[in-house]
Amino acid sequence: MLEKVPLFRNRRDFFHLLLLLFVLFALSISFEFYNYKELTKFDSQLVNATVLKQYTKSKFTKTGKTKSYQVLKFKSEDGFVFYSTASKKLQNLKYRKVQLEAWAGKISFYEYMHGFYCFSKILKIYPDDSYKTRLNTFIDQQHKDKDISLLYQALFSAKQLPYELQKIFSNLGVSHLIAISGFHLGVLSALLFFLIKYPYTFLQDRFFPYRSYKVDSFIIISLFLLSYLLFLDSPPSLLRAFVMLIIGFVLYDRGVEVLSMQTLLLTVLLILALFPRLFFSLGFWLSSSGVYYIFLFLIYFKQHSKLWQFLILPLWVYLMMLPYSLVIFANFSIYHPLSILWTSLFTLFYPLEILLHTLGYGDLLDVPLRELMHLGEGSVSIEMSSYFLVPQVLLSLLALYKKEFLALLVTYTLSIFIYAIYNVA
Picture 1 (cartoon, helix red, strand yellow):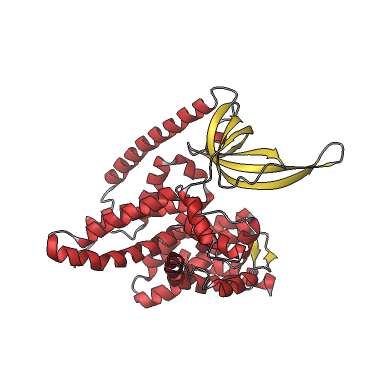
Picture 2 (cartoon, rainbow, N blue to C red):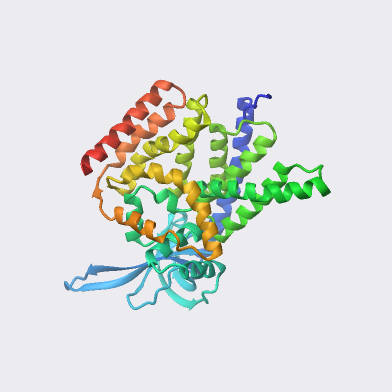
């Protein structure tokens, strides 16, 4: 068996890559700065955008009265995200495309990249006839329970869940299963690989035996996943997974070691060079962290059997990501550790639900799902300072070089897990 070669043979190769990525980053950031100057050229500008969030908020006025208004989160066609406010009487425009006049003339470039607030006035509401809306309507028609319908819309079309549902799934520790990410992309890739295999080999034996199934199936699967990625408006975690899939196959096809930190580093740097706005995306960094811990696990435990790895990996990822979950979401329940089981079962549940919804029987598992969601309605708040992530991140990086730091990392995450269990016991 031929031995896989490392991605970087020497420092010169690494610095050549860094130079190329710097050039790409310079071009990307220049393009963003051009769009920023166009937006801020005048006091106001016409913007076409999609409404990502819409919710009501109240505040006390100087006279002691309560004033209610609506907060809207927009994503423009150029990719920048901003917030604005509107009258409480404004109709529900969530996920609708609108044209508005935005007064963003005084924002900084950092605010433009990170997200900003500005006054705006909606001028036009476009007809709601997108393919994504049609898909969500198709899903909704198969469910009597509104919450279950919203769950599947989040799973298949990346529709954002209401805060109440987000909290339920966070309590159960399965938020990563609901938000479309690289995990879903992996399941879809495996499903497509086996669906394509037999029709392709049948035609290959008769018409093109000289072709490679691995290469052709990868091209077909990549085109399908790219279409799905664009259909969903390129969620950061899914974008990271797709780029990593492309890089991974290219390296694998050339005999380069794929399951390495070098591959992950290349993927992260390439994505940030092409899409610098993702530097401010929490979802992107959480997704990348999850892959880092998977690779760390495979580096230290690759000598164990595939079955052992399959059984232990969900537990490992759960423990490693738990500190981030508690710091960011600050809620925990006695059922939270069961997410290890749900993560394993999801690899069967996800393709099954795709099939059931395609056949029109999407409500078949609504009753057990509703019972599961009931379990997530109770939780405790565990407030943890972001300083708790400092030792987590340091030990995670040092564990790459010495096994002793890996032992300390496991001890630290287990301590946080025991502390969380103690608070709900």
